[in-house]
Amino acid sequence: MQFRELAIPGVIEFTPRVFPDTRGQFVAPFEQSSFVDATGHRLQLVQSNHSTSRRGVIRGVHFADVPPGQAKYVYCSRGALLDIAIDVRVGSPTFGQWVSVLLDTNAPRALYLPEGIGHAFIALADDTVMTYLCSTGYAPAAEHTVHPLDPALGLPWPADVDPLLSDKDRAAPTLAEATQAAILPKWADCQARYTELRAAAPHSAG
Image (cartoon, rainbow, N blue to C red):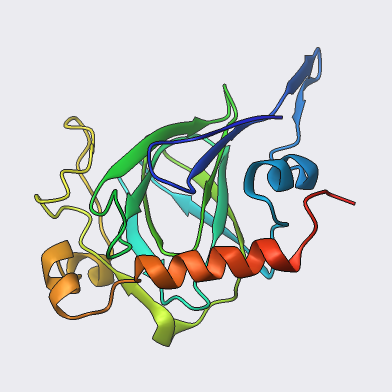
């Protein structure tokens, strides 16, 4: 398993090995040992989610209160999607910036988004399946959204795809409005959470 940190601190892309044969292919999208090497702590897996989306569906930008926050390890189980991590941590050196990764089944990759990072994606094919490994369970009161079409964010949605949003995402505030409403995670709180995670787990898969 190869991995690399992207331009937003803490956001890591994982590229697993693919084993093809005449029957198809085998891939392990998540390996605890590689994850520990990349992050310095284990993935605390509390809930796994699975979404199926038609072409053009945008989900996000979603994030959770920190602490505790919700870290996500995501990969595409079927189809293709453009996955985007947005730094919504107030005080971060990359606040308001984003990185994008194409996730599909032809060249499997996974993306880790630590606590405090906003997450969004667009399905590029019908019946696209996203799998999420989450560090905390669903907590509606602690979860928030920033509008994915906020022009100030300038997210790289394909021009040839008509976006389809949920009512909740369509009614979400812009990044500026979310900042003014003080619902965004703070960089210092996120750093404290990351330190806590590294201190609680050995730097090995064990």
